[in-house]
Length: 151
Image (cartoon, rainbow, N blue to C red; front, side):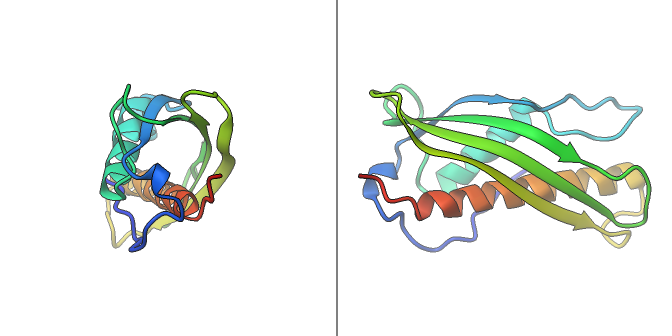
């Protein structure tokens, strides 16, 4: 799962550039090979890290000025259908590493629809929908960070 930001601008405040470290990602689930595909914590963390790197916002700990905590609150998936629309709700909390004060604390919901033309095999179609919803969510988060005025 690779999240590519669609944003071609810079953050309002340069303090964010190369200064966000991912401290925790939770809420994901491992996929049971005999059941519906899910998004696990490690894959989601890697996708968010790549997204932040591509947006020039990521910094490995302990040098980062801001710590990111991510909770994948829900991944709503259809049970049946030709087109699978997945809704992904994530809570992002960005804290100042020194003061521990939240500078960003929001829930972001995104959706993505995978069609039969994307994959005939239903589990693969669901995986595509999961990854698309997670990618869209990460892009919305990056856009929100770019708009964030830090004082």
